[in-house]
Amino acid sequence: MAFADSKSRFGDNLGNMFLCSVCCEKFKSPRILPCGHSFCHSCIASAVNSSCEHKEAPVGFNCPLCRDFIPCFGDQKEWVNHFFLNKTLTHVIDISEKNLCGACEIENEETQGVNYCFECCEAMCETCTKFHKKSAASRRHTVCPFSSALDACMQQNMNNLCVKHQERLVELVCNDHDEPCCLLCAATQHRTCHSVEPIDVAAKKIRESSVIQDIVSKLKAYEQKLSKVKFSEEKNIDEIDKESERLGEEAEKLEEDIVRYVSELKNTFLNKLAKMTKASKEKINKSTTSLNDQIQCIKKCQHSLSNIVETSDVANQVVEVCKAKQIVGQLKSFRTKEVHISLAAQEVPGFKENKKKTLLFPKLQQFEVTNDIVLEIDIRTAMLKKGVSFSVSGKQIYNGSFLHDGTMMFPQYIKSGQCFLFKKNGTQIKQIEFGQHPLCVRNDGEEIFITRGREMKISAICSKTFQHIRSFSTTKKCFGLDVFNNHLYIACIDSIEVVDKSGTLIQSHAVEKSVECVIVTRQGNIVYSACDKDKVTSMDNTGNTLWTYTSPNLRFPYGLEKDSKDNIYIAGKDSNNIHVVSRDGDPLKVFDNIEKPWFIMIPPDDDSVCCICSDNTKMTVYRIT
Image 1 (cartoon, one colour):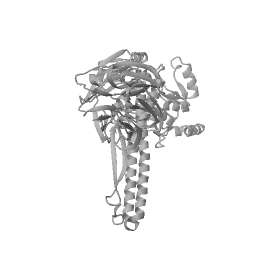
Image 2 (cartoon, one colour):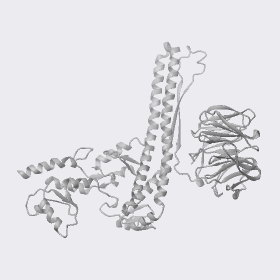
Image 3 (cartoon, rainbow, N blue to C red):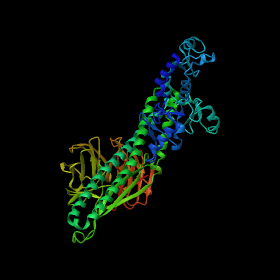
Image 4 (cartoon, rainbow, N blue to C red):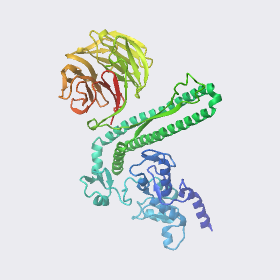
């Protein structure tokens, strides 16, 4: 009777630990997640399906218990099978049902088991536990109380086990597939692979190389780009709300004039507006959720990699690096798209002239632009995907620049000069009266600098209010301009003048004549174009020439631009193309069939977008894919 009572109390104490936290029933084929929590096979499969059901290109899910993000790759249907079966947990559960000491049971004695040996996979009473620890054969075994055994079952490190043969240890790494494997895998699936090496050799190479830092750097770049798109999409939801509110208010004002005639139509309109708004937000939320998962996946990988840099567990180190490579590969393979939706209402023609007789509300319209999110661009194989085109009235546009909020500014080089602000979708936002002959514009934080060539002046305006801050004179006519390290680099036909932001001369570099465009790389090297000589030259800050680029297929190279990798983009106006060279002057790519490109603009934080000006007036926004 006493033993029965004790057994009952034991079951009461451990019973809840044998239950799956999803179905609240005893574990069935428990799978252990990387976070250490175990769930029934069917429960975690249902959780995965539920989590990923409304996501585009899912890359993982959240643990149902701790909400830790679990990165996954490959076929979603196979994710659950990649998690190890928690066989120790299953065995402990089976033993706990009888709760008998295994050694005593052999002697036909029924003694309560209070401890568990992981090597023997057996329950033991207090007496047998003492002898077990004294025996030379078993004194090094891992023995602990049942409650602690359950905790250990929940926190097992499975990284040293083969994914395909879960009973075998990882001993080798296939570099062809970036996959840790056991001896059986190496003898079967990887027997024709060229590079299979022991786990300790692979770990040594990882420690001696910069592979972890390289992966972390790539993941950080991916995270920044995805975070930016996520922020843009969240901002788009606010824009939809505001536009929806504005359209609703307009509908209300319209109702005041024709309420007696169109109350039913009004309700229909607002219902359609609400549905369209909801559908638009749901679509963006769906994309944003997918981006958030990818960002969480990246952060999880970064965290995992940071934890293994100094670890002595070589298997764990290699496995995590391989996982990270696979996830990086999967992220690159995804055709993730940026979704942007805008709402508009088409005004009914003739309504203002005859309001009361026109019993129609504006027709709702939805404009959706979906762009591929390019995580990493290889400019050598890139292509230009044409987007929106628009024209700036009056022509005489020789330069432009992306501002930090993504809008575009174009100075008009005429006597009564003005600057135009446009969105990327071609919508004009603002027209700023500026002064005589504004030519080249460069954004530098809170200030925008604009050259005024014939006037021999440079003006600074506020990047938020566009109000004039100051102007200073130059000793020569000033054309192209760039800003680097708080210095202005000015193309003055026969020299590159370097001045501070108040106009004080710092340096002057003599160059051949006809130089009207200049940019400065992130290394501080100066790149300028001589359009009448069909060449582009780079020099260091002391004036020494580093390289010169010419090509039979480059004529009248006027506009220059650089991307985040310091690749130089050259607008060949008369050759109808855009040349791309590396910061060392090596040719990388030529984009042909661009009509008379005067200049090209690239946002400071997005190498996948550019705007090209043709014939001084026509602007075309491209995606670089």
